[in-house]
Image 1 (spheres, rainbow, N blue to C red):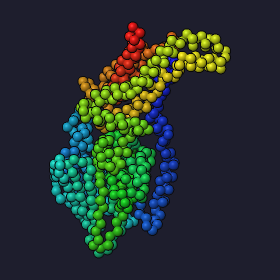
Image 2: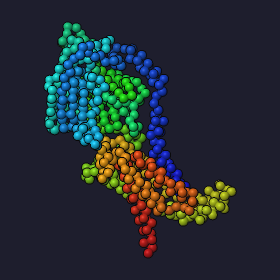
Image 3: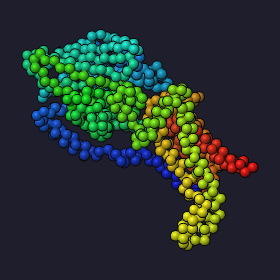
Image 4: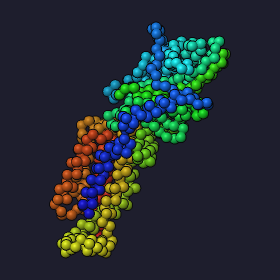
Length: 531
């Protein structure tokens, strides 16, 4: 039995350590040559137009004014964000989340999700005449400062002229939402028809993968339900069907444009360097003299908070990267959020969730310990059979199975609870690593961030000690080699957990303590009954 237990532990370690590498092996980045060929093919296809199709967006350098222009800034404050817009393209220079501090050490400074990679900022508007480069526009702001109350609404408005066109751009805010309604109205005030497109460019300093291995950069949710994450070695991706949404992401945050479902548009995502990305939405514009057209879409710039994204009903929750174990991770997060609302602390919520899982697995645990105890009692008979039939493996296996059958013992029954807990562990692992709900959430004393490692390594060491105690209580054979291996396992797990999120360590620590209590109760109950 102990050999199988070792196999189960080694398997669980292999799954935990090899999981990130398996993801990259199954979904490898495209080779450079293949990417280049794809880009050439895309470019060739984009240059061919057929009747009824929307001209595709080309990844060309953005035009900038030949002469310096005076830039004016407009700030808007809501209970959720503090934003700064520029008159150059009506773009976004700064978007600070007021409820999410940048660092624990400086809680007064919110996370800025619009670190502009260009002067005009993110969400800038461009006019592209047919066959020409995109034209940068300079607009005039209607006001310099806007304040939005919690239950109120506010607006940032711009207007200006370019290429014989009058452009009006409006951002409409509500005090209780991260969603912003954006409207661009273009009127042809000239004597000649205009043909081209109006473009909105989302830009940010995100690309590739972050330190924990999660994707950052362009992301697209297609109308067919497919989620596309652009690899850091892919220069660009494009499409001519309206996506559900298109944006740029980091581990915890998302900036996305949500176009109308039936909009005629093209999109392109670009990774211009190792730390900069851009997503462009282009809407065709054909205007006769005096004609007006309005382009409308919604914008989300905020946290990847599961319940929040789900409430917007736009598919934005797909951006949370739970991985293969999403079917387990999402229910865990829902339960944790539910418990936190009542107990006020995610650390306590994790402890309660651990207790719930132990109660659910208790029948299996009881059966497992019973099987292990019976196998321990059978060791003399098992050893005798192995010695008797050591030269006849087939006969030995047959006799062993007969012995197990006679005593009604399943030789692998003791491993089942551990094997079943592997997906539970990984599901919770993904939640604690990915969910912004646990970012900078304190537990008590020295643990100030459940999504980060224990700064003093106290909880992993205590966890290792409880694992050692649990093994000492578990029925084992007298095989010295196996006993030594089992003693090494707590040390290995302790070193593994040193860099794990402290919330995950708390889960495993509490799980060990409850397992010790269960083993003590199960082992002592029969003795009391006999007394």
